[in-house]
Amino acid sequence: MSLENLIVFRKAFSLACSIFEISKIFPREEKYSLTDQIRRSSRSVAANIGEAYRKKRYPKHFVSKMTDADAELSETLVWLYFAYKCKYIDKSTLQGLKSEIDEVGKLLGSIIQNPAPFTKKKN
Image 1: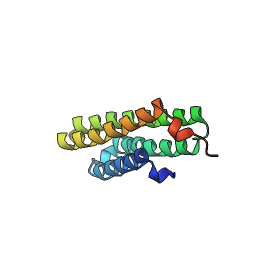
Image 2: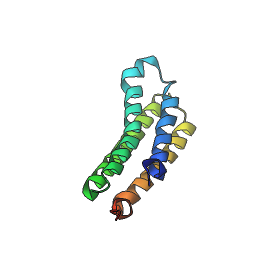
Image 3: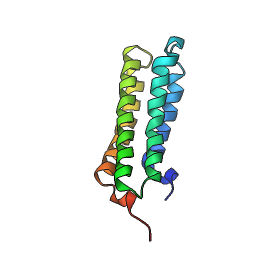
Image 4: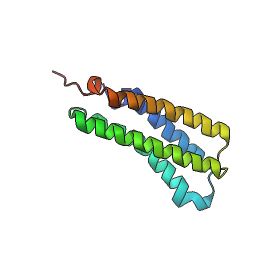
């Protein structure tokens, strides 16, 4: 199985791309704060999943990187709340992205709780 075949990776990558597109409308004065932070944290979710995938032969390292991905996912949600509070995104956009975040979070939580299917060594 390749990284691109992992549903959690595909969904996290798609979420980061959606956030990138939406963040293009943020005000210029947010370029080095909110815009930068939300793009970094959302991309970091997929990046940490990628790192975890490469460490799959080391279960503790794998779980650690998946946990990092989950933490970045939570950070992304906080930045979205800021974007909503500052009126850069509407409630519908927030709810749609939150739904995607919840889905990725459930997948990450499941993998963290039961990493064995992802970390089994091939003979």
